[in-house]
Length: 424
Image (cartoon, rainbow, N blue to C red; front, side, top):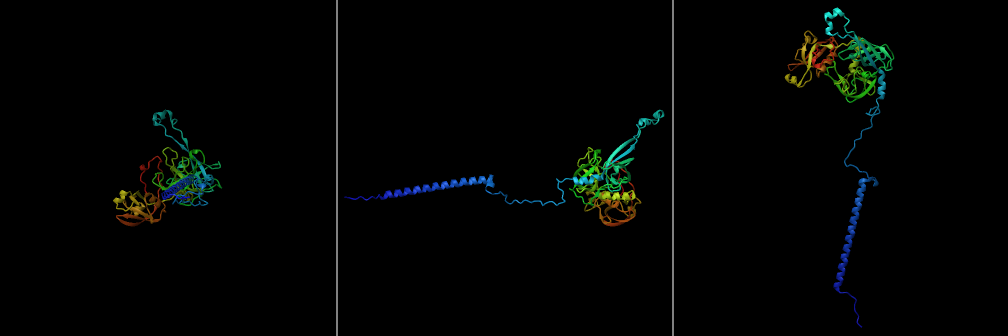
């Protein structure tokens, strides 16, 4: 019996091995493809969750390189825009009064009625009878014994003055004195224990500070408006002779004149005086006399009934760039002496037209308005030193200060350009 070996041929074995290797390779590619797809899907889901629901992952998105500057906590006494002005208003309202004046005005009769024939038959019966004109304004109680600060134009030429207190009491008032050149006046009422206002520190006000205007606009009654200080030291407005106004956008209207401009602590920083308006109402530009000037004028009036100012008898004008170039000046500081009153203090001291006035007792003169204030602050009879530039030379001249004469009151209707030059 023959035995047969169960062995495959050599070619068959090689084919089987190649088939097995190819199957293994296909399986590995499938597994790798499945892994890659699963990973892609997982990363996609993770990206979507991180983008729209980061809190599910406990992540917080941060901007790289972003730094936030956090303002510090405000001080305890700081006032924010949202803070109430009620405490300041309640403090100042009792110190602000309403001022009512009466004036008898006789209107001239029609020119035709002045004809002698009419007068022969009708006499004076056709003449216009005097009529009473009322005016209203505001004032500030500055002393508990009855002194009140207001504007000169509120009480000018008044035959009768009545003051209404915040508690409703009405009292007659008399004029202690007035200063038309700063538009200030002091009244006196016979009363005691009045709520006097508190004056702010001199020069404590800054541009951008909050202020309140308190007065009686249009006669509607005590009113408080708020705004900020828009500018300081406003001059050349043609309102007063001596100007150094606080400009504010707190609403000021007719009737507010003489009222209080106070800071957020209820302290007096100015006396409301004028508005810039084309319609007669507030347009966001009001002017107040600073408390530094108001207090100085008030104290002089209460002490002597009038205001005394220095005077040297010169007419000045600002130095324009063209004038500076013609005089070979390096800048426009100072004031040009345009005229000198013959026989006046400046003439006797050697001041000449064409001189450039640079300083008064060492205090720099920046323009004609500053010079006017510096000279007015001098005491009549004292000897002052004026520094002038003349033909490229600096000279110190000694001048004996005179007393400034009373200036005529100019009608408000006149334009500043129409005013005559004034001697300082």
